[in-house]
Each structure stands twice: as structure tokens, then as C-alpha cells.
Length: 327
Image 1 (cartoon, helix red, strand yellow):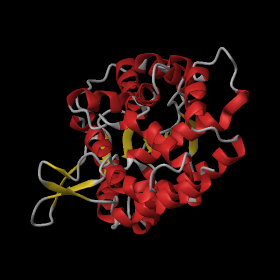
Image 2 (cartoon, one colour):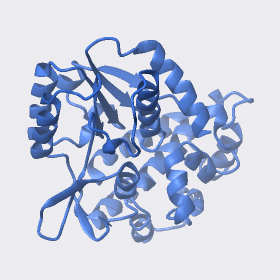
Image 3 (cartoon, one colour):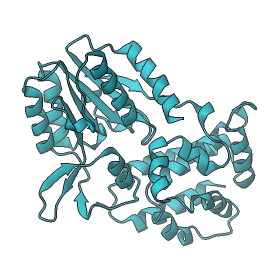
Image 4 (cartoon, helix red, strand yellow):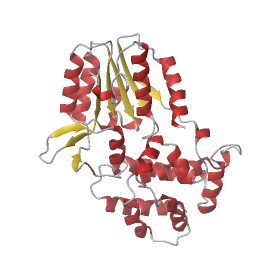
């Protein structure tokens, strides 16, 4: 499925961008773990192959390619490296708090952008330089301002590939200077056997992570927990501790559930998610308008979750609000 998605999106991307101009500022927007980074790898690989350039793996081992993401700090507080895509997802999803016992920063800093600006200033070995920022919404305010200046002043041939999972969190000043490419996932390729399978099949990189360690082994219980809330058979606070141990990706999982419930009777009988809707609606029989209200709550809460220091309080509050809006 990931290969099919990457192929479709690459064909779409190639029709829009041929890299014949000097500079490109492109936001690649789509859900975390949908395959955006794999698409970037395909884009750069095809570019190097087309021009008969030598490409080393990983991408960061090439003199004209810079991958920028959350920083990793050693015990003395020194920035020692940039987190890889899979490590970033494990951290963002709440599966791991540290990487190799080192602390992960919560934002991309101005010092990282200064190093990027210096990197861009050097002449390229081949033709274009490629800057991958993973994810652009992780820039702090100082870094955003410095990055904006670099976007406006870069004269050397450079392709900025800015990965993004929350387009609303990208400053308008940056968006206005970029093209946005929306990564499309073909819903017909997604599994409809269970809600969990459907969710994981929409996030190919997540599936790869779970093959090594099943961080989501009890996620199949969530639909029934929502049913118990809906039937007023469980105190929402009782579920709070369990939910916060599942990682912050639980918010994405809930969003996926209520997105299907929102579509309701408008789902075509031949749609791959009709079966899922039927099973979910038997457990949580709510109207599309109520699903929309819950989705609004979840999306608003998602913006605050990653930076919320007191996750116990966060999930207590979320479950109380969710519980009130289920019926």
C-alpha cells in the first residue's frame, strides 16, 4: 500500500514540479506517518538518478542534502544530532520519551536554522541543494523568523521540502512564500477488517514501527470504552490513566473514529469504510452533527497535548468533556 501511495503522489508531484528553476519552496502536507518522508526520498532519488548524480543512503550522508528535525541533546545539554524520521514519530506519538537515553527537544531552534542558512550559502556539489525540514510546524518563533529570512534571501539553487502534519500551525508568513502539496492517501487501499487495522494501514511508517514493538496492543479496546462512556457505564476519570499511557497518538485514533461516524449515512455502500461505520455506530450511535462537535474538541485539544506538562490533568479534562458530548 505504501508503494502505491508513494507512486501516485510522486506522479502528481512530478507534474507540478520539474526542478528546472533555481529555487522551490514546497510544503508537503499530510498526516504524520502517511508516507511523506518516503515521498521525499523518492523525489530526491529520482532527481539524482535523472542527472546521473551519486546518491548516498541515508540522505543526510550527501553534501547537498540537509535533514533538519527535532534536536537530540546529551546529558550535558549539548545538541549532538537531529532525530531521524522514525525516531521523531516514536517521540511524537508518545511511544518513547528519550532516544538512546538522550533527551529530545520539543522544537527546532534558531541555532539549527543558522546552521541551515550557512549550509545553503555554500556552493552545491551538483546542481540543487535539498533542505528537508521535518516538520515545519516544529520551528519555534525565533527559528520561524530566521527561516523566513532565509527563504527570502537564498540565491543559490535550493529546493526546500517542508514536511507538515498540521497546516494550521504553519505561520501565514511562511505559507505565503511556499507552494503546498497535499499528500493524498487512497482510501480504497486501506484495510477495513477492524478500526485499528484501518488506522494503522493509513500510516505505513507507523506499521513499520509496530512490527518491532506493538505499542498499540490494547487500542482495540478503545471503541468499547467509548461505548461504555456513551452508555454511562463508566466514570471517565477511571479511563484517564489508561488513555495517557497509550501515547498521544490516541488523539489521532479518536479523530479517525469520529471522522467515520461524522460521515454517517453519506458513506456509499461500496466504500471501504461502510463496514467500519456500521460496527462503530452500533457502539456509539450519535448524529453527524454531534460527531463534528467532538471532532472540533479533539482537534483543539491535539494542538495542546504535545506541550502539556501535566498529561494526567489533560486526559482527565479531555474525557470529562468528551463524555459530556457523547449523549
